[in-house]
Amino acid sequence: MSCSRCGAPYLPADPECPRCGLHFPTAATPHVAAPGKHTTGDSERPWLLRGASVIAVLLLAFVALNVLAPTGDDGNNSRWRPSDLPDPNAPTASAAPTGENLAKNATIVADRTGDPGVDGAGQTITYSTANLVDDDLETAWRATGYYSGEEITITLPASTEIRTVGLTNGYTKIDATSGDDRYTSARRIRSVTWLFDGGPSVNQDLDDGEREIQYKQIDPVQTQTIRLRINQTTTPGKFNDDHTAITELFLGAQ
Image (cartoon, rainbow, N blue to C red; front, side, top):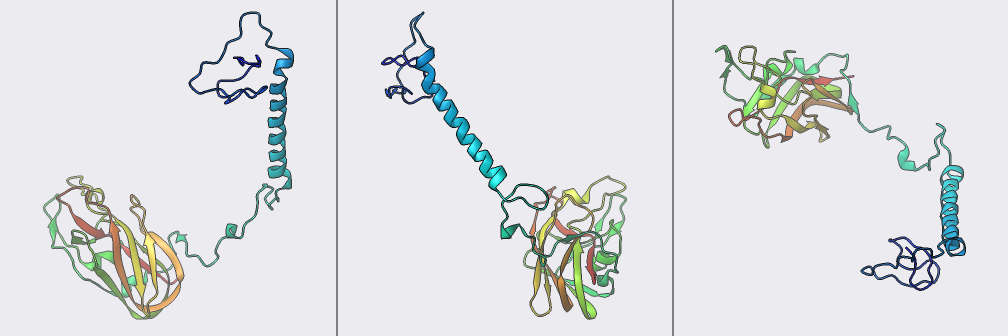
């Protein structure tokens, strides 16, 4: 395409002629050079100059980013910020601890527990808090519906330093007879708060789909009573299986 005033070539996206500055209305149809009209040589020099300017800007940007920017110890060119440093005091998720589960020696009381049920083989199933520390992923504590504003209280024999907490976020059983998956059909817990003597508390977010105990390392806290509060759950997978459940929970000194 070429300018109707001076004949200089331009692109459809150009708002004006690169040589004479003629403004191109967006609705206007650009003038097309007649066959045989000279469109090379001097008329293209502004384009060459513009191209050279673009290359120069890119080179300057490359130098600023890759030469002038500080280089980190790992050899990557990056501009250091104080926020890049990890917080050494921040609690982090933990792998399975090696110490004993202190909750096994505790008295565990729930504000509410569901009535016994029947499995696929017709056997009666109970959901007491004793199931929380029996190391059996086929048993669970559970309550009907959403366990909202209610707690599970764990009382240790004596004041103890706690460094790790953990729980499963649902009923992990798959019925051996019917094949029903209790985990996906009921609610799964997404968030809880652990509350300790004297007021300290720790929030723990839980991954939906993770059927093993999900552990969290915390800053050491001296406590005898631990209250577990459920903050958020998923909706039930099946309308007729609206329960909140925990298969196992853990308290550790390591």
